[in-house]
Length: 377
Image (cartoon, rainbow, N blue to C red; front, side, top):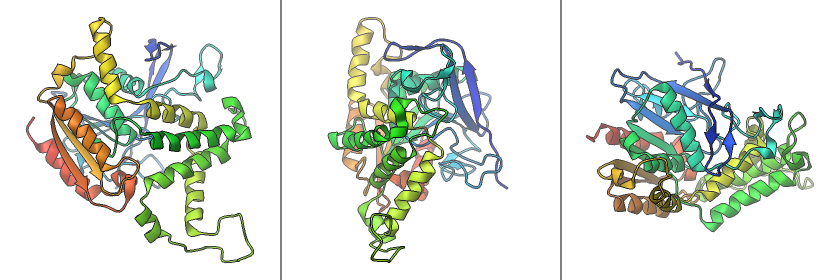
């Protein structure tokens, strides 16, 4: 029988200060939990989602046909075993699935924030999760884990508050974007903003910029797959073989990208896409750690000294065919944390599934993650 779960919303009216200095007077955080918190309250694992994810990581919502986005990894006997661990997943700040973002109502105006929503960072996302953990009475995490953008949040939270987590698992991620990675995101953002229906971000209550967001998703999805996988799955096969038909999808791969674009716009807000990809592009873990040390020297940094990372544990996982966040970038993460005296394990999984392997190739990941979580601290 499918396990049913509901997304919960934490409402807080305590002012939330962003890294930019802006303040949100009201904050909603959407989250889901799986498993049970033990009496010692030390078996909690925080799961971080990627760009297009949300708080619904596992199990089913009522009347769902499909489970949460990482159901293959979260559940009884799975990589993150809900018979042993209490799993938490939140929707990120700036998102559009229950957590405060551009589509949320600005209490000052009674209208959606749209582009008046302040800029956000990966660190801001991590800080909202600490608000939730405090509300849940969880002072320490067994592990923080996530893939892609989730890996960025994982590293940021682990480095800022090393006393709050025993370990981290970073999958298919990077410490900072290269020029090429920024370029792909910028083309996606331009596609959204070039759509006349975007209207400077003020499209709420009207038809959203579906065409632009769909193109942005198509561009992104190309980077999630490997060339070999696309060739094997689609090749040059055609659905429409009428030679007179031009400038509309005829190749199988074109129809596939159409499907991905259409399904994305049905569940995602265009402004959230702009804000979140901007946060991803501006993420720089090394720069963040340097600024943290400078700020601490001035007596104004929240968090814990980096020395507290000594003897902590980490696992970094990459995939051979991932050309969005290739193994070379994963190895840079390993070198950084090794230099910080974290005991880091590294696994490079052979696969043709590209970046999306962290969502699909669960057998090897399960064995690696279970082994890591079972190892003594």
